[in-house]
Length: 286
Image (cartoon, rainbow, N blue to C red; front, top):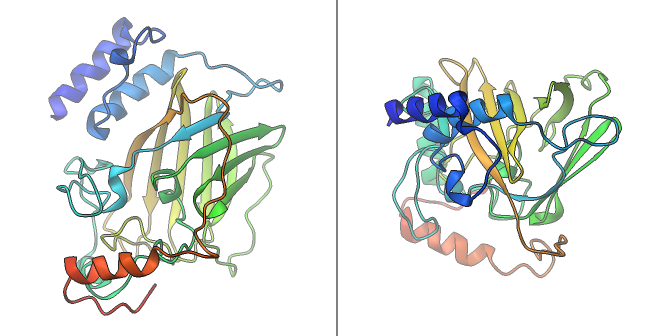
């Protein structure tokens, strides 16, 4: 599979990265193949620009939805269609946990309920691959990302302001952006470590530092690359990558999602967890 990824990337560099003429010419969906192809396409694609000359990421998008159960490769479950790993580094597609942290991940899955179930914010970068509609807006000095699920959002200043004080922890973290050519680079600190990466209990600590990169690689695709560093939890930094695909429906708008008031889906999901993981105790977020 890794050899195939190299072939795809090489083909893109040698001329196949021209503007798309059909859906068949998209970079493959599998992150191991998508990532090198997207890097090559992003190097040659000239994206549309905003009035201030920045690459436009604006529009309605949707990320991969198969990572709900796990960001690592997994088979189909009762709550997920199954799919490949979002992790492109290390090459084995696995999170490089320290031994204690791998045990904590297993305990999270066995004993606790995913914080997404009671509609807490999905965090960074999970908000991008939780099944939902995503709208990106840009103005001079800001990029705003709106999520239909639970009406959460990211406000990303791009004016070089410093991060907030280190004693503040936030569900979505403190996001600061800057442009490197046509790529929006988002530096994320001040995470409160309450969200998980997925339903499998994959997690990070308050010391985590995330750098996410957003690059348009064709009219209908954004390449997202997120590197996570947390020396108390992982043996090394690691990276996930995946596409955001443009939603083609006309006259789209974000709708109200009943994720809080009048919400009736939490108990069925908890009951499903009892059936899938008999040892679950339903203690809620860690």
